[in-house]
Length: 157
Length: 157
DNA sequence: TCACACCCTGTAGTCACTACAGGGTCAAGC
DNA sequence: GCTTGACCCTGTAGTGACTACAGGGTGTGA
Image 1 (cartoon, each protein chain N blue to C red):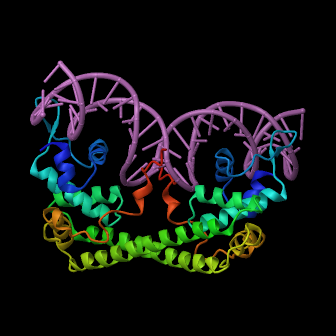
Image 2: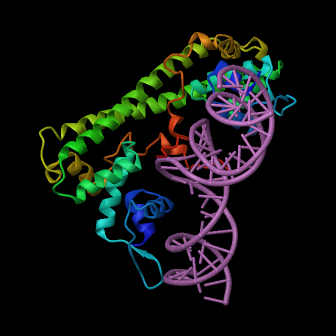
């Protein structure tokens, strides 16, 4: 099947499929006479696996590890458990952080109700007030944006 | 104060401060005779504001908007409310998504308890089984990784 | 003087995509 | 046969919010 067909079958974007191939997550398929990629059933299954993992927010590096286990019948299940446990911990940490965030946003939102000027806006006052209490640890569970924390973080070894 | 001092005072990384200056979020400060940046109190306050917003996961573009309101005393509070409401909605959507994710991971984790081989791993079977039920909409609330959804997404206009 | 912490600019990399440029292929319709 | 639009290709760059590094300058205490 051609890449567009695979994309439709798995609901993974064509460009994402090519990206996965480029980074080695998905093996390069055979090519038709016209240079088009020609995917087999194994590719469909593998991409489905990948997609399922992505839906669980599992990082690509971990997915690669899981795929290794799929290929290695002698591997121990323990590591797989650990991967899922790690992911579960990540999700839970993020959940806790977001719950704290929500609370803070709700409280912040309460600072402003009736229409008035920006100068009188409780939200801005609250956000600005924080600047003076910075070292008092006012930002507790939301001390750092944990969501974007990995954006620029380099795992260089 | 020098950049390192500002970084320490606000707990924002030196490189992040320079990044904020580069993108215009933080005005360029005066320079000492040796070319070093020399920050005033206003910078400290502004950066504190920014940091507080970041801690609330507010995107930089929205923070820039909020900062405009701080500078514009005649602006209406309504837009500030909307920004916070939008962010609150984002956080809540993400919370819902993560909660669904957690449930799925918990159930997935249950597929595996006792030590055994990867071939017998219920987790792998479950992740692989999804590949055959792809079009049945098994991936519900976690249909797409919503967290990374903005990673490659381009808001090109 | 030396060593080390800090500072500078500019560039590139992280993560997981996503978009685009420029060009080729295929098939249906005219 | 020609046109058109969908699909395909490779290679490159951009997204958002950082983060790291190269190469070089400054300041200060020992």
